[in-house]
Amino acid sequence: MQSRGVVRSSAALCAMRSCVLLLFIHMSAPMEARKVRGGRAQTRRVQQQQLQTPAYRERVEGAAESFPLDFTAVEGNMDNFMVQIKNLAQSLYPCSAQKLDQDMKLHFLKNVSVTCNDGSPAGYYIKESKGSKRWLLFLEGGWYCFNRQTCDSRYETMRRLMSSTKWPPTRTGTGILSPQPEENPHWWNANMVFIPYCSSDVWSGATTKTEQSDYAFMGSLIIKEVVNELLTKGLDNAKVLLLAGSSAGGTGVLLNVDQVAEQMESQGHRGVQVRGLADSGWFLDNKQYKFTDCLDTISCAPTEAIKRGIRYWGGLVPESCRQAHVGEEWNCFFGYKVYPTLKSPVFVVQWLFDEAQLTVDNIHLTGQPVHEGQWRYIQSLGQELRSTLRDVPAMFAPACLSHELITRSYWMDIQVKGTSLPRALHCWDRSLQDINNNTTINGSHGNHNHQKHKTPPMRGCPLHLIDSCPWPHCNPSCPTIRDQLTGQEMSVIQFLKHMGFDVQKMAQQQGMDPRKLLGMLSNGN
Image (cartoon, rainbow, N blue to C red):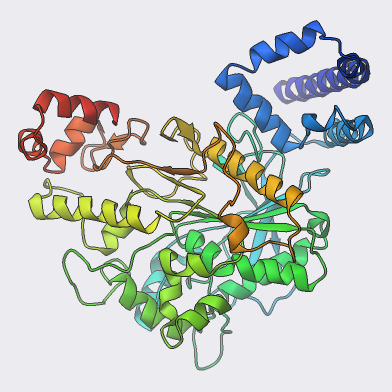
């Protein structure tokens, strides 16, 4: 009985949407006609007042981006406006076909020669959104292995990252993959594709499993094959393809976004704008705080692990980056070295104090408070990371100690200088639309010069967002910190004391009053 009630309420919601939509269509032409004749309708004045509130403006822009509706086109082209309304109607019409289950469903690749590490078939999860011409392809993260020993260990402890044999039939999208506009205001109505990570090669490999090698490393080929299959499901008619990923998946975006753009162009789909969104994949090839032998993926220095891995995987890197680092292609796995060589627009999301980076640098924030040397190392890491992001025009870098963001349920809550990540991505989207509308671009994805925005960004729509405060969690919107031993929530001050932070000493070094410094830490200034 309860499920019948849920279905009834869903049908009622659909009916209500249809009624609102019909009313909107009925009223749109007369209202806008009055506007064109010079009249000022009362509804227009109310809308203008509402638009002054940030929350309403964020929601309206989210809806506009999701369908998308371009209300600026109304004044000069009523026919185009009505076409967009019809597209909206088509996206809402099949209410009876909209199931309560909004999950993405598993599809194994038809090309069975493209596999996971253990030879099981690779695949992807998809939730199609009929009527939408925006596609979001997400690359999962999960470290890597770089030789027989580390891969054997990984297979024993993290088999789902090397095999598809126990993948569930569905996945629920969260964060930027969520189908709910409350959680995902600008991308909720896109076609969502989640590509599980089962190649352990930072999405770079092109090596099959043979009698001589126990594992296949086919990350790069998996992406290529998924794109080929999606072209038969509507991707060929897309306007935007956003290749996103977190952690190793974020690095995978940097390594593959140009390849995907070239793949689309070579198959005749020049109208598809290919972009990248790299989350928590901007690693540094810096010196470890404490050097250790390269025995496992956790303690091995990033540079040494990638040097070994790229040979073991038969890893591929973007051609332009390969030419810039002939014989030392491992450099292309580090964001600040590969990014300048890319042609496709890429938005970078990176915590200034990334937990994965600190882990491979042998800074472990558990147990006893860190001592002064570790504290200085953590601060310098933030400074170094900040300097590598200086010339990235589209980015979001909060001063928090965390890892991964775009698929977290709290991804809307984090702000840098008063701007949330969804808002920044929306601004980036609009800036790229303006470039494509005003500039003739050869190919499907433009070039790096266009990405650097020769025209200034729109007022009130920032793209380059990086915290200037120098300590972990000095941004008050950072995720909740918990004591790793007790599980208790910690305030920023408690956390910094746990980190070995001496307020009196730091205030003295800065020539400040300790109370003022405490206020700055609490407010994130």
